[in-house]
Image (tube, rainbow, N blue to C red; front, side, top):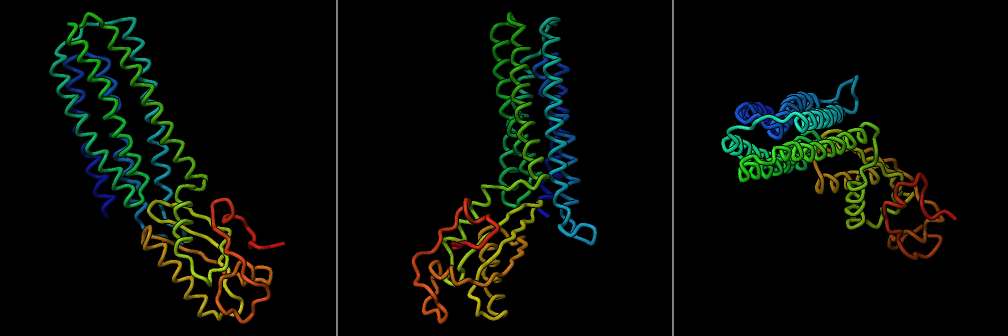
Length: 326
């Protein structure tokens, strides 16, 4: 699978970049570069943990896991977010220690070149991972990509700090610790965002952005016989998207006709989002009080004249009741 292959490259790349950053720290003894290297440790752990999780998430569902193994990606992201926060705290401790007990910095020019090269590679890899994560609906790839991008952006601050130290012949050694502290705050903020998103997934928190997109597609391609839609739920489990909903159809339609409408709904969702969609659609028969909302032409059972269709929105489509009640 593409997600497994990409995550494998990310894991291997993290080892190479970590080795390069450790060489840069060994040459310079800069706490700012050390913070970048500590971030590399998190990248390695997260990279291999992410590889394990996408491999597990790719397994087909079984008797013990009827919804598949996709939720392991949330666990992996939660561990990654926690590790990022811990790395930020370690950076703060190291920077404060260096601030009160400074030591001589050496070979800053060589360290700068190594860190700049690592930052550029991180940026390119991060952009690619995020785009592929969105494409394949993989939280692990998105989290890994976001982490790599944050690492690359933070490297800019490292580069600026080291450059200033070089230009001033290290007359402001405290600047090394100040830059490291700023880097730590950015790191902790990134870790919080990753952790927050993974916990939301574990709690089956509604993805309001995805829900809005689904509703928009359904509304734009709405068929006249789709009288009402309610109790809509959209949940992402790894690369698999589950959609539950109640669809109201004309009460006199036969089972075969209702099945065709469900198939049309599923085809519509797959065409606009992904072919990895699992739909659980409950069919409701229309009620007389819904005639004013029904756009079915020449309906033989109409009790009231058609007024206007209810425009589906986030505010009304999740309700657990048919619309049009009085």
